[in-house]
Image (tube, rainbow, N blue to C red; front, side, top):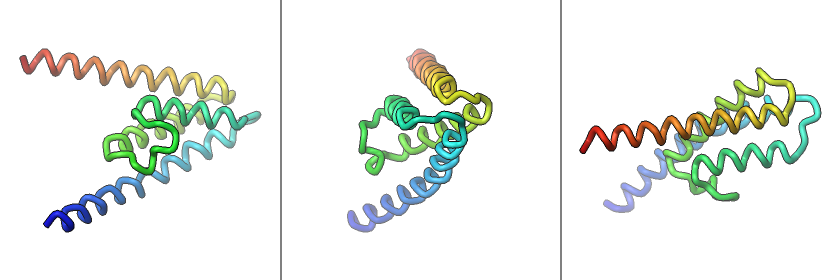
Length: 118
């Protein structure tokens, strides 16, 4: 029974990972189309994503469904920003600002929900 459940969980995780890839490529492609994009822009972007999702460098293969879901959302935000702003440095700053705002919103909602349940 445990083996069957493990395979079922693995299949569910693979569905999420397959959904994750198109948004990753869309985000990175939008960044790559900017003028004067440098390697450190990609590195800074990945660091911001990892910080938000609680992942360290090289841990994305082991990300759980919640972390992959967060990455999907972040990469959609990134794509929108990269299509709005021409400068890669300014675009990364705006992505970080929006990620921070999202984080504040999530943290704020957790606090409100905790107060309601008491």
